[in-house]
Length: 94
Image 1 (tube, helix red, strand yellow):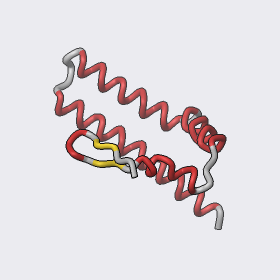
Image 2: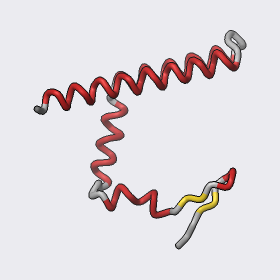
Image 3: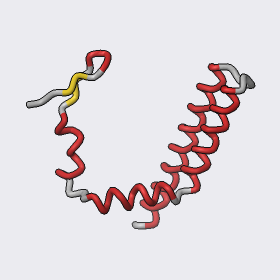
Image 4: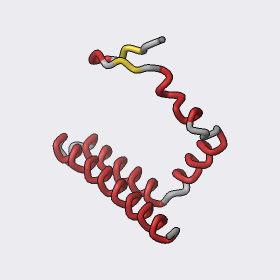
């Protein structure tokens, strides 16, 4: 068994990366998921917010701590939006 040793001593089994093929997800399904992500308004809003925070930090308008807070807020907002969308799909399918 091949094992990849990552920084900080973490070991990763390369077979972990191929789990999607074991579950029956083929390449076209993965590509359609990426296409759906690129068409998502939530994704683009999160990306623009992250870029805005990075540019504000680069220009010295915000501190490192404020930059981290902004990125956490972006991630939380995106995750909440996806969770609400998923809940709506599950409610509609019943």
